[in-house]
Length: 116
Length: 109
Image (tube, rainbow over the protein chains, first blue to last red):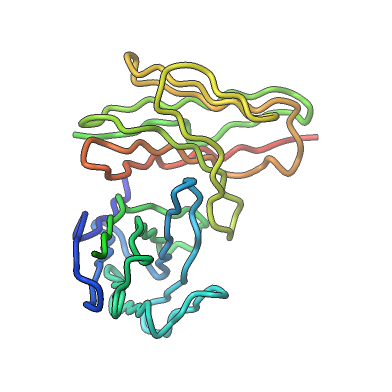
């Protein structure tokens, strides 16, 4: 089946530093990747949608200069949290949709970010 | 290896009851989630079970048996708007989410 990986699985960083999270589709090509943030009440908030080779589309209220998204290839998207603050501490989850155009998204295992 | 199994697709009738099963094998367990996802939209959180038993929330209920590695989502009084994919996910001992492939639920009038 379709597998999506994320790296790192967890990261602790100091306030003010930048953190890059990678999302890879391991056995399929993903034209579209999605980045979510999971809040303590378990809800997933869509942050942005990225299409390979084009700029990401950010949801309302998500700062694009703070959460930089790059989708450089059909198997890799990265989310960089710039100048991280403690309130950015969260669980970040990516998902990927294949080239077939079907609506099925395959989710990654998530990255737990703790900003001190 | 770790895996989550749930049926690929189910069909039910409006007004009826449907049960979507999820079985899992993971390294450790820190809770099981159910999400609903309509086509083209982000998943919405339905339930979180970490202890055995049934959690009821309106028309939706979720059941967990940790000893059996089994959960189900029960939807009552089905409505057409319940047509969606239902995702089962388990958080393992490393607090990583292991996702099922989702069950596409089709509701017929």
